[in-house]
Length: 113
Length: 115
Image (cartoon, rainbow over all chains, first blue to last red; front, side):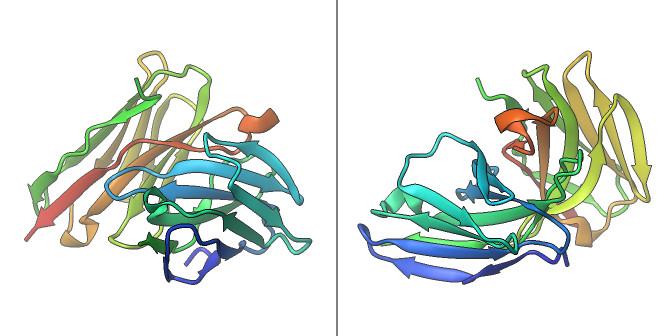
């Protein structure tokens, strides 16, 4: 177990709706990243938060947004859901102390219908 | 062209075989290299983390990095049915700026070890 927990584990939403996914980072880690993993693909970087500030963003539209809280937990929000948003959403935490290995949670499986 | 290329397989081997998994990359700025194992419907689990060129061994696993060829490998000795999973290579550039901590993954290789 990595100590990174995500909720919920599964979610079904309708196209056009909004969704919020949550992540609690591993103890001592101040950096949280979010990834989207489509079926049969490797994870794709969405964005990263370091000490409550966005610190890098991948090639995702602005309807993907996030927050990091003082306890370093994080949220991923997706507005105006599209069918292609159906994927496994992964949260990863890292210590941000000059080491870049990341530890992942179990993911949230989002299905958009 | 993708920054990281990984043969998706699938790869099927008998128990006890030596498995070789490989990735190539095009971005010479990548300096940190990782291998993750992902079981079905689970999050990736970190197996190996390396920084420099050369070999790193951990039990039955050996990670190899050749920066001059932009090529990394993961070897699994005495493979077991419990090793059946998807193996993902991942890379990141040096710390600093907006690329700090961003991992770029390969597509993943599906491995099945049969008894």
